[in-house]
Amino acid sequence: MEDLKRNLQIIKKDIKEAMILSGRSDDVLLVGVTKTFPVDKIYDGMELGIFDVGENKAQEFTEKYAIIKDRVNWHFIGHLQKNKVKYIVGKVKLIHSVDSLGLAEEISKRAEKANIIQDVLIEVNVSGEESKFGVRSNNIEDLLTSISQLKGIKVKGLMTMAPNVDDDLLVRSVFKELRLLKENIIDLHINNINMDYLSMGMSQDFKLAILEGANIIRVGSLIYGKR
Ligand SMILES: *Cc1c(COP(=O)(O)O)cnc(C)c1O
Image 1 (cartoon, rainbow, N blue to C red):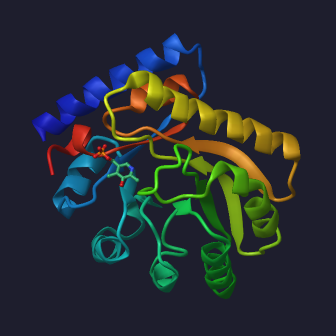
Image 2: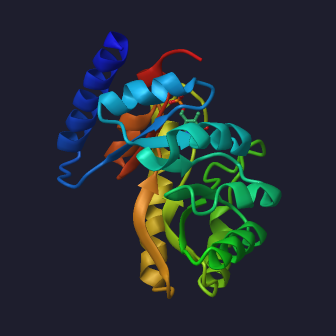
């Protein structure tokens, strides 16, 4: 608990510094990524004020949700298969990882059944790495246009993961590209599509992400410790 407290203090200071450096006065939402950690860590985080929690696997989320319920805002940040959508929709505040029309349709269908609208982000594979999930930037306009017709889903922004490299310039250029993509999308004025959120930055690169306009950062190991 003491570790957690200290980690969080350092992160908050770093967030503040990056905000000042970039001249921003808006808010950054810190999502505590608790994948692979036991629920105790979620409780510890709650005591320190972390009420936005990210999980990346449907099974693990379901187990933790059964215990914690709606006492936190859940964020689903991992690759989501269509057959797992039913375990997620309506329970999470935001799905960060929509990367196909098929997935969006399934989410919308399940949400309509439950009489809700599910908020989502579109995951973009900015760097074009084969190993990464996400929509390629050049396909996003078509995808958004199709999703905008769906009744049960609301697009609230974009998410990306930077390559796992030690090259700040490269990492920052990926974040910058997502920000520019967001601005291009805003200019398209697609009905029912909104670009409130840029979810980018993890333990090793959240400062760079904030400099490029991230307003949701997803931080795990730097808060909760090594996995
Ligand atoms: C694990 C994970 C994170 C957090 O990673 P850390 O290095 O632990 O901060 C953020 N986003 C996604 C999509 C993840 O899977």
